[in-house]
Length: 388
Image 1: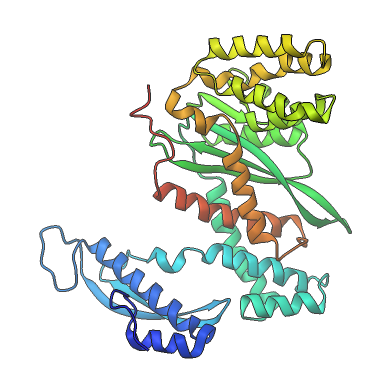
Image 2: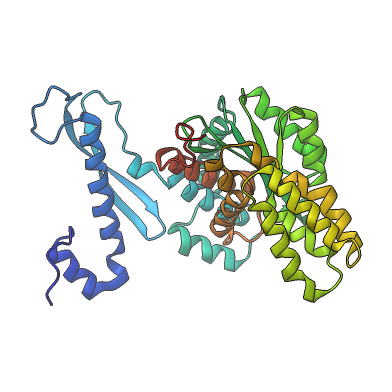
């Protein structure tokens, strides 16, 4: 078999992939991660191997083997070392937090006696290892400490603050309950998104949201110019109590959905949706207000409850017009946070029911921490320098 010559993997390895299929996965992972770690060390030292440059900051010091338990079995990596001992490659660490959290969530189900043979089989198959109660306790303590530091880290200025919640099934007091996972996402002055906080609470009642928001303020959250969220009663009351002076943008997507409950006939739904989109897509606030007045007048006789609802609620979705045009598409809904929730659910789906609230917070925090790091090191979400 012949291969294209622009692949970076050795031809011998490609031959092995062809012959062994998924059995070669551990070796592929080892090679890719080792290569990434070498590139990280080169970037850290600001010099290639044996290269002499004025910018060089330190010297390489060989490699140290490290065996990691992964979902495809034990893999021994060659971790690059530097003489000052301050370097540790993120390529190896990245993703291990959520991997450890998932392992622990599954393991706790087994250790605490609430699991079945199926859960034990999933633990061994998914995590590649069976764990004892001692191993769980030690690993959990280490991971929990790391994640608690992240959740309680000091905050700064975030012009835009998004808030939303979703639910996970958690076993508590002998029964399975749906607990609320409260999440706050901010956009910092550099235009990067950051996950500011997460909490697992009994519900979305005001007392839980208020405690969550007060903790954000205590940790130094400031400079907020706009809060974007849905119109949940508990969140609304807490927001007014803690950040009452800050403008609020009600999620336009949820407004569209809420409006349908007031449409008297199914054949009117598409027309109403189009009228609301026209309001939201107006070039400025004055035009949006004019479109809204026209829509309210249009439905006063054919759908009076809808007309009243639009007059009372649609203006809450128009605050965005007071902000830069370049930002409006990003700050008019909480869709980005809901996509974040879907990603967390996808990663937590294998657990199904968390054995306790602690294991739920652990896994969710680990996944969110990992995603937040990707955001902060990735592309700019909003450009503050070029906004008008």
